Length: 166
Image (tube, rainbow, N blue to C red; front, side, top):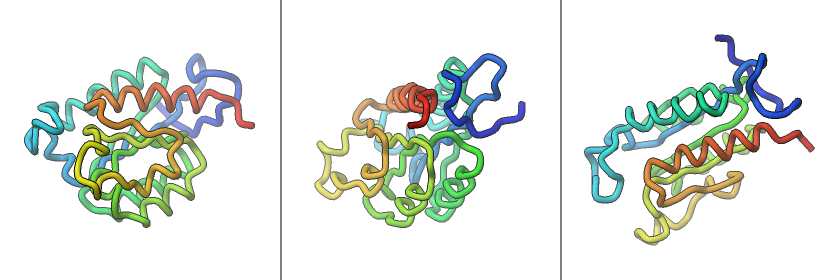
């Protein structure tokens, strides 16, 4: 299937239209999901999250590209590439949330909606986790809902993509 950027015109995605692409980006240490601190992050693996996102995206008429990296520059490169072809971004920047002005700058150059996701409730954790560079550019922030937060983010981003541009 050929996938192109969705401009939101003409109503909700689906029908004979090409599915809008949504990038689902995951930051450092999320490759250890299910193994690292399961009392905080749960026992689902990142592969489980990807499978769930794929199911939800299909139901919503979205195409997703799912990525994880422990390297900041790769996340930035994916965001840059998304400028030309993606309708939205769901991002769990993980530890880069609190440190990366570079990811913030890349997201500021993206025109579509961005939803920030965190598996744990960051505001109930260490004080340094309370600040997010990403939140200021995000259309929404989902925290503390476990991996279900990704599904919530996809539902919200589908609605934002479908809304006519003003």
